[in-house]
Length: 479
Image (cartoon, rainbow, N blue to C red; front, top):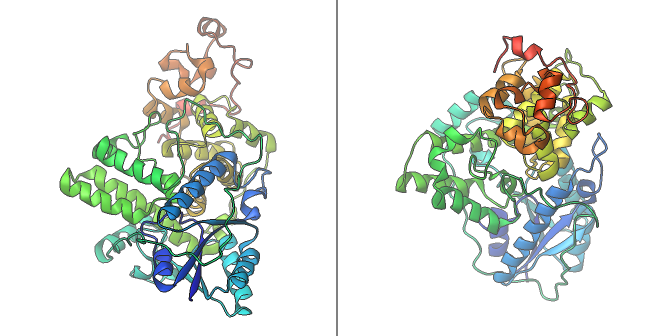
């Protein structure tokens, strides 16, 4: 009896999962396994925070529970192991006399180190290993150039792909699964530590529930039930509410949703309802996600270094821990920044527009090491994706895929443009609820009499700014 162990990684789905589909087809019995790698769930980042914070841990837990349920519906099961994959997977392969291990392919160093170590360990057991690419809209083997010649400017990359490269069709779900005889399963091991806060603040834009089932429900609801895709391009820079953006990113990050499944649904939507700039723009955003994964494949560890993929030795950053902690806590005295940082701290979610602003503020106004910000996002965000996260931070810091060396955001200008009534700021900073909209984004300029009138004492109820914020009001570098 041919047996294949399938190692689930960031592909926690049954739809459009080539590796798992092939495993079911190629073997007479399959062993579906997920490894809880302590290097990802227990180790701390360089800034002293867990790599996987409680919000992402809960989303992962829900995703694994859902995957197990979906496997059981087809006669399968999910075995959850705790330990380094290169150690625990060979042990299981030996115990169940596995012929091969199939898994999805990753591209960044920690993940590829585990792949290499596993491959080496399996040689002595005479067990084959095969990896499948399934994380992007465009398959890496279909790129019209070798990865070493990937354009460093996104627009050039996009133009080449859209003109010349087809998108592969999705794979169906396996109809049924045959497990290896005598397979011992495990309970649903809790990933978060007892007492860790995982309750999301009720003010959150959306309650993100992990798993393929929830991801497919969100896809259907956003496109078909609410018809929100029709206006995506106009609303995508929103800050409050469930449907100003698709919010697919968390399910994409863990592979609960396939980008190709999203693409096919968008194309069906275009055929049955409307094709416009908004429908194209969602695919455009999936292309950006692809691009950062290919950039990580091309540049390797340079993605994680302060000098970035451009290897800019001319840049330097501060390492002021107090400034960093005030930024992380949302206590900078700049309402638009503080509202965003508190939203992320209390929900694990942050809109794309807010991410760009808090990143620019940290790098260009506080002059802090951008890798600290990327590491904080890694710990805090539900939708953390290693390639998109570090690629975007490189971009904002001027050491990545951006032809401009200084992508500076005038935070006051951004706040007035994207939160003109101050609704977002007041949503997350209730201490400023009585400040008029025309003053709330420059609250530091309130006189003592105005502070008394609006019920906020600067330096007590709300912090004074940690930078010279009035410079934004005079700056010509407005974006």
